[in-house]
Length: 396
Image 1 (cartoon, one colour):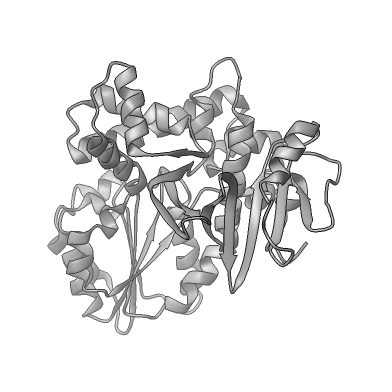
Image 2: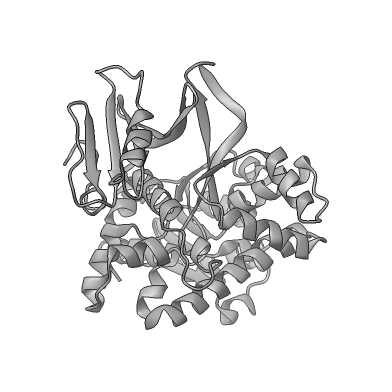
């Protein structure tokens, strides 16, 4: 498995800290591999390491409570600072008590989990701010390229736009196996991580809601508009229920919401947000006859890549014309528009027209899958194949 240096670099400074290191993210995004890579680095300078994987039945059959965790670590650790790794710890009730106890006993604690139960209010209050969290995401294009080279496999940008970046899927053969793997992962997340955890009684209705949300990525929605759509399908679903269900998807790291900012109102538009999938494959498995939504998946891919680069993102309402992203980092701001192609004149005028009324000083970018350069005197056109290899918008 490739070394995910972007995340390791963020975590290294905390290796010896008494802060509890929380490594979280959607299922199968590579958290456990990163935990193993951290252990490999630490073992180069210390053999005082204790590791427990709570997805392993051999572990969970003998460790059933937080006290069992503490007892196990104390019986296996050596003198001096002990590095404790607890993988998928949310399976143990009151796990936070174990973390609190261990950090007081000269332990540097690392934990992973697949949903924000690790960061919910009841647990963060118990940790009393003594933690630092790192969210891991599925592979971006640069990581996929490196992993494909390691596996001696070929893949294309189109493949990435359809099947995304869950690491395991690259070890499979063909779209059939990939579709089955992503579908089973999707069912596990929806049923185990959400329906069972939150005790959702209307499971059939909730699954229909999930299908609608994940096939509608890179679109602006309000809870009211979704509620109206559900009612049109014969499902009685209030705005409050919709908002609650959206929060469940976000808590399991399946979707992200980004705010809309209005130039005219000079404030965030609180009633509606734009929603992106953690991985475009969650859209693609819901498409029939290979009629994949390449347009919205491309925008979703750009979103994921910009987040990986470290940008804070929002949607910009430029006097009624939507600009897909305001990307901000280190006092730099970019206005970014995304389109699959602007080869047709009407599309060209519409997409570039979204930048109207912005000043010459504003940095404007359009990302498309075209091979022709459509840059103008004040708008930079980035070809998707070039954008996907960038580490930063400043480094072209």
